[in-house]
Image 1 (tube, rainbow, N blue to C red):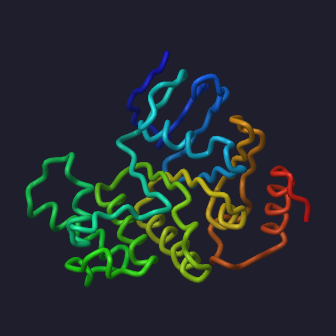
Image 2 (cartoon, rainbow, N blue to C red):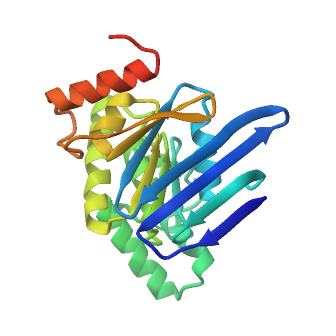
Length: 245
């Protein structure tokens, strides 16, 4: 039986003993994942391991599973593709994240302006999505996710299509926004370096199961930096993924 309920605790989102099938394929096997309020959790694994399915279940987008799902409020999502509406301006794309709340127009405008200012695009509200760079489009996507001030942000490889320098810039932006708003984050990524750079904890998914997890020593260091601890975490995670260095 599937259970979904709201909770007001220090947990932003939680899955307990989730099993999910696609036809006869058992894609998630007794998965339990907790994201604390103000915590960044990274989920890594090879292609087909079930990472995005975990995120979809926690988002409430996939309901045909067994187990329990709890969230402290409606989560927000951002994906690898910005998924902006090309016929809407940047501002109305961001404001779209508030449609379910039926807020007065002035409140929508004020929140949209704040969200765009947060991601450094206050001057692009009237621009069209096709005029944006890849990094700018992903900033707009992030603003649209955060405009409703969610307690839980779900990120499905949001920086995977960006060049290396833009990716580092987006890492810094995410951490700035996290420090400011203290939302919980579940980050699905195939990039071990990204997981170590951003997360408090990293979970390794293999064949639909959490096969390993570790707490990151000294998390949220400056993007691109390294230390003996980060090198050890990286090597440990790569080993769990079957990569020897």
